[in-house]
Length: 415
Image 1 (cartoon, helix red, strand yellow):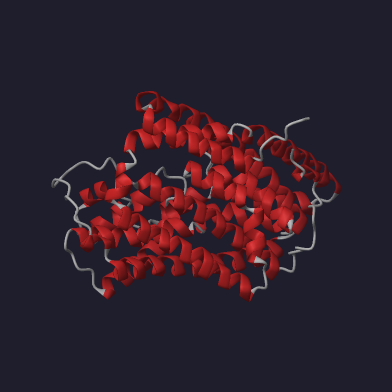
Image 2: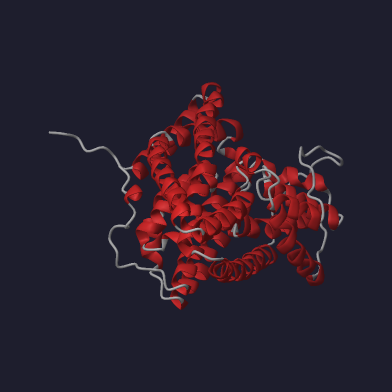
């Protein structure tokens, strides 16, 4: 009798379980297992640029003109802005309500201690525009900078659609490229359980399970916020737009688990594209909205920025007035958009906020020990938030067909 191969989700759960066991009992060995995670993440990054460009170009070519692209873009950015405000506010409400910085007995870092992070600079229009509009598409692709790739793909796709039959040859070529990239994704995802195993083992070995006990109150409060955002805010939005929320969650369970276990929403992008089209979102909407979401709609990360900033202020006994907190929210609403692609971007932005409000920057050391644990929740929430955003825009555009059992696109029929 042939034994059925466990599903990818089951394999990832096993990877997490074995990672915890190995990281706890064989620390010296587990320290080096981060190499497995590094290999997996590099394989994912290898896929991202060609996948995003080919899928987005084909989707834009189907939309066909700048007027339609502009309409969808405006709806998308309006939605992203509204959700950013909600997530920032929720982080503020929770940290003010539960006061983890006041209630936890924390040993403050020494004055002037090095955090290893450079604070984000204030919003600079010139720098932001230089980041958004690529001087070289090859350079943007080599660095996996999603936003410049999106901008170039929009121009390329609209231009290809506008020249008729000659452009169709190019669009068909990149459609074939997207098929190939999804097949490569299939091969890469076979390594995901090993990447998860290495990531979890290395974290447990370096941080220890004991760190959870000391920061349990903080971790619980923040994860409560993430749960409320997903099952209250996003669920309510789906109710308003008549989207089957739990059906959507069922479709995206694999990418959510990948994001959680690797603490990277980027690692989940290829599977998220597949899952959303299986759910019934139009290909042209998925290929446009989802890449934008990776720069403009990181809900879990946004919530963390306000939550962490006020938490550190509380730990130092600094009272932030309502006015200061509103000012912080408005600054974060703008500055957070200019750091897409920066490693540990959330912590970099928080460092900037601490500097702005004259809160000791070394307070970030209070969070560095558990940042990986918090980042796991942030990454998973980012994936859910972007999935709901894509479904909402699809519904808004009349391009959501949840009655379909299988997507129309052959490349989504992954093994």
